[in-house]
Length: 264
Image (cartoon, rainbow, N blue to C red; front, side):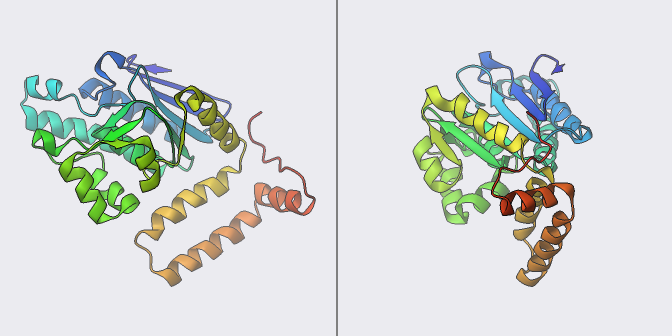
């Protein structure tokens, strides 16, 4: 499906493709694009066949952040416009984080402001050499949204996160890899191939195990160790009794590739 033409959302063979489609504005989020992203992301919660979500942007840029021109010119005033925009963005990010399927980001060119927040919300972020990241918010006299003040400190630590958000310095792809903002960096010409290989592998994997990884890692941020160890034990024991768990163990013992009932 295509939601208002600003978000292409297609689900095929277990892969949900969310594609930002406002290239003439660097995929900047205005009210319409933010609302479309929310609608597309939340709709995937009702799609049980989704095994992996692929997030990308049209044109030369991944997403340059919020459209401040839209905010400044909005009839209701900047405060109300930003409150509504942030509400839609936050609902979309919450939907992606809460979805049991891994979210894979394909990042090319700039990812600024809310675009950087989207990257930080993904489970696997693969960047081309041209990718660059900047917080950008305080440069405009604003504070971050999109969960950046929560997500980024968990990735790089609070000291580095404050440096990045306060100075708005440009982070190239290689530094982003070193900081843990992205998972992998490849040449721009190899970006699609690298992303598609990861997406295909995840689509053919065991969805219960993938969902457990997301859930357990998220819980680890606030869980006490003993409680978390109990959660891990319950999870691995429960998964061992599922069809995919039985298949995975059998394949390991038989020294063959597992067939998880994924997509072909």
